[in-house]
Length: 297
Image (cartoon, rainbow, N blue to C red; front, side):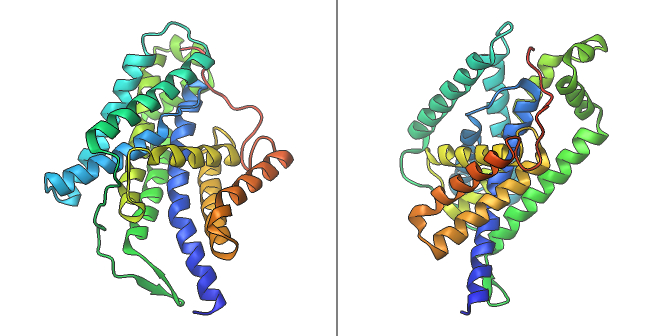
């Protein structure tokens, strides 16, 4: 394999894992724009998506086409339930309190997942077989196409939802000016609940499509959340296009670093780039200093 093919192989790998970081980063941004908080349980939604998919396909023997939406729906219910139980009843909570609640939720979900599925990594068969596709001397797994298609579907779906649907416009209104939204009859608390459901669904999709490539265990969500949070920060907290761009960038840099330097330094390389960009542009690649978000709900 020549140098070009090797580099292309690393890029393909980086784009696949970077797409997952991008989807996790989108989940962070949705909740941040609606509440002003960072949901540190976002990674657990990714983990649950993969775990539910494993159970539905390997234990209950459901076909992928049926198990996929069921797994996503189950995680959406978990996300909505978490918000309704832990956050919705609070009256004018501070951002710090809300962040601590999400951290506690992450620990609780991780513990419950450990009891439900055990500590061993879970395997999920590839959706379209494991025969690699050859492109210019490099190979790409069919499962990677599922990952890319999922990211594209999520991006297009969110763009349509926020710009073309009444509920999506209501969420944007709440993020821009919650007081004005209340005056026209929009329930801000319901929009917050919806944001948790939406972000958990995106996390579930990411978890389902990446599990056949990386396997899944009860503590996998923590690292995915960390990288997704890095993508959200690097792209500009609150910026959806920024999260996608930054997620892909982090994934590619990790893959190139692991291939050409050492796999031990791949996380450090991504962190150095993240810090370097933030020193130059504190708002991130596509972010701004004035991110509109809800501060009270």
